[in-house]
Length: 304
Ligand SMILES: [Zn+2]
Image (tube, rainbow, N blue to C red):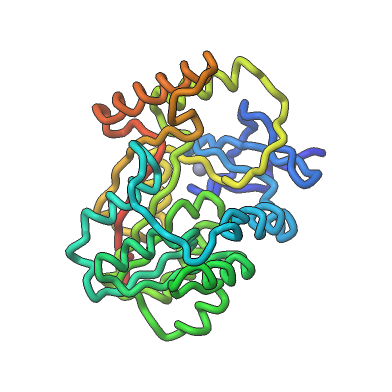
């Protein structure tokens, strides 16, 4: 199956200068998904974009089956291990904890609802959005949180604006990330703070170098993998994306998580090495601010 690389544009910078990367293709749902490198901003883009059927397979109920086994209400404990992505999200929210009291927060792609719950404990009034209807139903059963599909939410809150809009680890999943930010403008007022976080899967750090080296040495043509992340960005290209989306930066930091390397010691030599490299890389990235594999951003819409 050939991919027409001339008809696609970078989701981050809109350049049409995309070339094949050394990343192995992802084979999923009997299709071939390619990782194309943008020559202008260095982001990787997965093409073709998954269609509706692919998305159903990727994010249906199966993706959240663990919730079904939860007895009674879902409990949240906020004791995350060192360098955990949800722990980082909470830490970043903590930085503005005094601003949340009595304010409204929309958590777009709220997942289990842990972020909503935490924001509630800080005094915010919170509404959540999730993609899959069945998942939303399940979340409503298992939590006391106010969660909707996006189309339900758009109807119910048509005339409302939120003081905070959180997009946690979601932009990288979208075939049209700009369009989502455009659409969310209708729920923002001039002082709405967008809190956005996600992976930086092309950014510099020892972890990235090690994973890339492994990938180059193995020279696999393809992997049987679910291409959930459609854009892989760098510290610079991610910021460029926010500028182009009309956001004005208030805060932007890069931190580092263990994933996809192991976060604890396991009894395999390879995994042990990976664990030590990931740990050392996290420490190194604390010294070099631009190093890391996760970003946290706060900003407001420029022209509102
Ligand atoms: Zn680009």
